[in-house]
Length: 256
Ligand code: PTJ
Image (cartoon, rainbow, N blue to C red; front, side, top):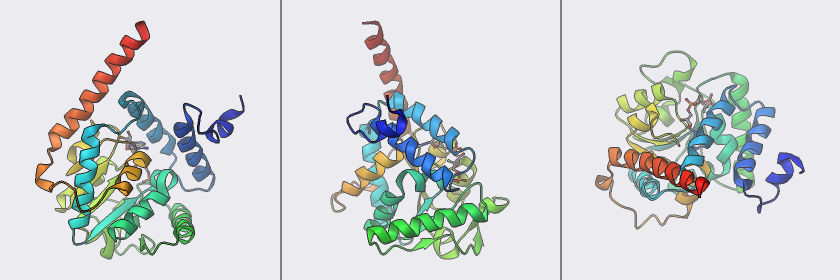
């Protein structure tokens, strides 16, 4: 037993991926990138993912294709990132922004200048290492999201404010609702199909963030389904069913 770091270094370990994600959060926390409650949010996500079987369920795969289509078709698509998102999948978010040809904006709930600096610095380094030409916004907030109070309302006019489609992974419910109220197509990635963001979003992908992004990055953009074919309530119901069926099967396995 060599501790979590050693397990995370060994891809054959059954909990490799989960340990790797925890390790990424630990590193990001030390760099001052995360909110104090980041680990709580992650733990909640892990619990749902465990029940989903730590796999991309078919309805989430379809929702991801539709989400990518919505972002590709939008006039001003934007990818919004917070502390957990940069820590868990900063590279993948930058690569998705590059694939779509849109900016990425750092937009955090628990906003402090120190965290904003740490996140922007981390993303700029990643961008340089990946050799991508992606606009990273958030450093100069010159607009507010109507209906929100305090620093969490801050955003950039040429980013989130003008966006017609926005990807908001691990979003808080209030902000999700405020963005929907602005008439935007709000695409949520959230492992909890019962969360307010999942329910209120325009398109919801019930999948683990890094797994979802890896999936979206492999998709051919020419053969994506039409936006009309998306059924929001059915997508959420399918995710809940997958959790319930998964739990039932786990119990059967356990008593056999
Ligand atoms: O960096 P900040 O200041 O913007 O803060 C970010 C967090 C995530 C701490 C903040 O937005 C927050 O408190 O979020 P909530 O309200 O706890 O919601 C997070 C949601 O994301 C929950 O429904 C979790 O189930 C879900 N979640 C957590 N980890 C993952 C996830 N969904 C997909 N993939 C994950 N890895």
